Length: 393
Image 1 (spheres, helix red, strand yellow):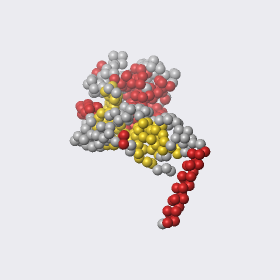
Image 2: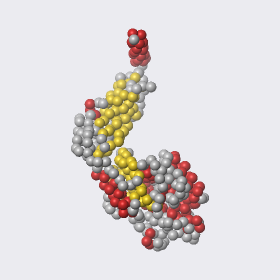
Image 3: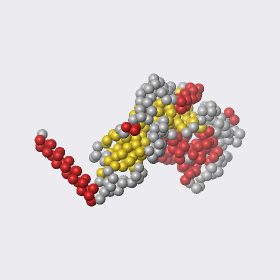
Image 4: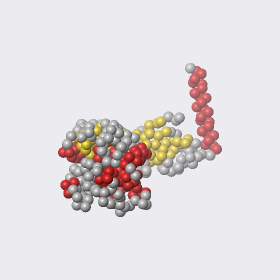
């Protein structure tokens, strides 16, 4: 294998780009949650991890997976629309905890069930969805688990559709963040339901018509997603907020009270938006380096970023950012314009490394016979030189 070379072009030094951060560093964010995960979706930067890969009881936060399965059915199955009605079984009606107060006589639509799950956290509604899509809740839970694995949610196992306490029903905070990102990206047409602050089914249970998400009314850009609480799990929240061009997703669990959950959620949103800022490092299509080409019509190829390079960095940090290009070199010809050849890695204190793809600025065709002969001669010369050096030793 060719060695991995790290090139440090002068044009990419932090000082030359005016990105030196030399102010005193703030302490890292400390959360009262027992487990947490915060990610900036705009840049893909993970801002906080605390026990994020540990599978834990997710309580009603796992209803997001039930909703994802319903959104998928709405998107892919012509037989399921927002107006499709669902049968309510005796088992669904008898489900305890938070509820829509459905009866066996009801025939709620898919849209009503979505609202009932999001706003009222209806356990009965999740059973109705599960039985309507898979026949039984047990079969639906198996489908949920299988789907989660294909989505990269490796620490998720579902035993039911509602998050009802069960020793095998587990999700990690990172998995919940992955699910949330997929929810936002895959089915944006349904995401607006998560910002509903109030809804009641057929005038029933007026005391249960308010969304439990404490951030929706604060005017901080919060627009979802789902709270959760059981005695085993504590109080948790999967949340998302957008301010300007940036969107964050956060997941917390293990808080002792709903007030603590509300306070911690607001603290995280404020910290994520106020303590991190995007920096303009390089414009799209700016040549950042020249890489040597092996057996090509040209000796080098320009390396550019297909998009603007705008890493997310701490507003206050203790040192300087560094930028380096990682690429295997020389690059074998032929090379297509736009072909990815390496990555720009931005790193520094108080932040994880951020990677941006770099591509060929132009196509480079394979060289002719004379170029190939020169390359072969170079290889032969190098091998002979190495053999002579070895004999001398």
